Image 1 (cartoon, helix red, strand yellow):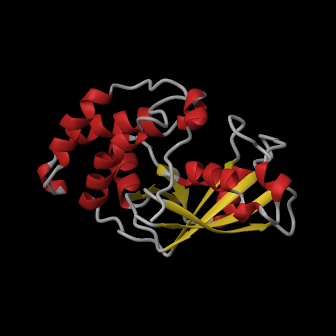
Image 2 (cartoon, rainbow, N blue to C red; image 1 turned 90 degrees about the vertical axis):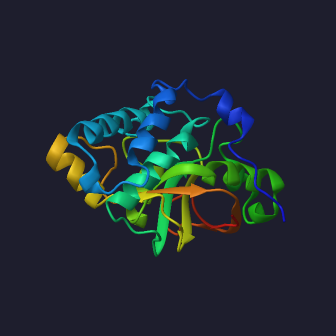
Length: 222
C-alpha cells in the first residue's frame, strides 16, 4: 500500500514557531484520562480550556501550535470528546484551503484535467489533507474559507470532501460547556477536528461557478 507523505518539508520551512508550552500537554491529558465530567474540577477544565484557546483557535494567525507539533494536541481533544459525549463519526466533513506557495500554488489549474494523474499534484494535496486539522460539517463554510472575500488570492482553492470520517472532537456540548462556565472558546461553530493519517485523492472536480476552485474527494487509508 502506498502511504501518503505528511506535511511537505517545503511547507514546514514556511511554518511559524509554536508559541505555547508543549510540555504541559502530558499533565493535562493525565488529568482527563479515564475521567468523567463529575470527576473534574472547574480549575482543571479552565486551565485546559485556556491552553487550547491559545494553542488552537488562532493557528490561522500563526499563533499556537504549528503544523509540525499539531498532532500533540490529539490526546486532549480525544479525551474531551469522550467526556462530553461527542460523536465518533460524521456523515461527511469538508475543509477549505489553498494550495501552498511553498510548492506550486496553481498546480491544479496548470494541469487539469490531468491533475489526478500528476504525482506532484497528488503529493501537494495529500500534504494539505494530512494530519490533525480543522474541518467543518458545512460545505458552504469550507468554500468560504477557501475563497474568503476578505482574503483575495490567485492561488488554486480547494474544498476537501470526505465521507464518514472518524472524529477526534466536534463542536457541540464541549463548546457549550466551556463557554457557559469559563467564557472560553477553542472550537468554531460547526467545527470538526479530524486526524487524517493516510489520505488518498479519489477525484478532483472544478467548480461550475468559481474559477480556480476545485472539489477534492479523499479517503483516509489509515
